View: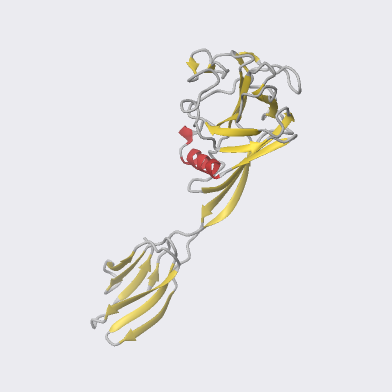
Length: 293
């Protein structure tokens, strides 16, 4: 009797990713780009003008083909927190944007950026000077998904996002890189004034964002274990172990030079179980195999 291999469960792996792009779009300077600054102003200023962050991670090469993402966390460092205790949200982006090279100082001063170059993201345009947002600052349903992927409460030094929807987002991006436009970061309620905080970007080596991705990889399957081979009256009988979510086939042939004939198919099993097979004895030599197609 011969055995064939099938699919199996996976082993757990973890990877930490830093952004390949992050920037803010800021109503205070609607035609400026802030792409090379070491923080993103996110929240509402004392004048009632909003700032929103954009962040993107490259999954290509970081998560192997066939892997299944099981858990995701995003940790954002805070370098200046006016909105401590307030809720911030991530929304999956639906359109492309470019980080840009705009600067306006770092630390706690100069958050206006500089005049945008061609293709750079600003409050007014996702690619200056021509490609606009659905409305200045980006709009739900057109530029980003209306429902948030996760929320987190801002602390004095950091905040961490984690949710099942973030797992779904990363699985989507890993399977289809053309859909990966990253997340938009905003304060959930932008109406209160003086909630603008400065979130560290990838230019801040000490506090930069970190996306931690846990995933599982396929492993070699457990071969069917054939046992209990016996002749019962005029039948040959044997058993083998079946694995959850696997399908199996029992085949036979009368000599080693001929092809195999399928005798029985077992569809994907709902749980691990023992399968029993019987076949009539016909007076000729017969070879059997169990395989998982």
